[in-house]
Image (tube, rainbow, N blue to C red; front, side, top):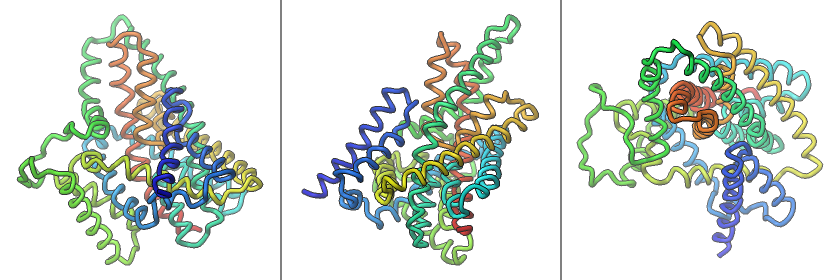
Length: 411
């Protein structure tokens, strides 16, 4: 009975966060609302061990971390990343700008460990937050475990609205082009073709029943009857790939972080056709694992006391402002040479703060708001969505794992 009550409380806090986010059209992020509710709950009536009581224990989280990184590899389409290389380059430059400015100026204002514990979450959202939190606990630096969580919760309050503003400004520019008297009729068609892969990749994550990748001649052919492609079979394949990844990392004596190996093996297995697109979505367990991981991350707020809050908020908000300024400077420098508007370049860089599905949601919200006709909406979507998606894949799926693994060695 106690476990069920704990699960109901944890999921209830998640629900309130999602409903507030939905009501505000994603301008108030669900993670911020849920994080605040957890914090207030820990200060008042919620037991500090409610998350492990709800079954989200350390063994569960250990499995979740590895298999979710394998899953993230199945979300990546290398052909799409190569096709949108300009967006990838700008997004990655934003990450570099964030690290340089936040680390350079931040280390002058705050302690080295505070900056190192906080900055990775600014470059990769949830992924970096759980990697840093787990690493800090493994090194018994429990006093800093709240910093990655606080960064993850707080930067979304600035990142989401700012991204929407940038996309709206670029939408006005695109709509003026769309209605220009001499614009070729083929422009919209070409843009639609160029974004088809990105739209399909998004559909793969949103709907686990829609295939997104066309078969490649070099993919391995595994002839398994459709009746045997069960959730258990998919999870078995994910587990095998995870075992191989962690075994490889162990053979290398963890010279390369095991999570990076998991991500690489996920990409390879997906490209070879051994794992389906968005495999954990299709297996029906992705959301359960994500909610468990989120609950684990929020559980680290139980060490935050009221008198500690000011000591956390000031450095976190300062580092957020420095990091976003670094993103803006870096993306602006590359915008014109790569044929992007400053607004679009900055929006692509900002995807490092949240990644998928937030980049998908915000882009669709903006196109639906700015486009008055279906043709306008489609034109905007064709130009905005591919850049936003690949930016998020490059930063959150790849760069964040690498940066978090490097920063853990700097503590």
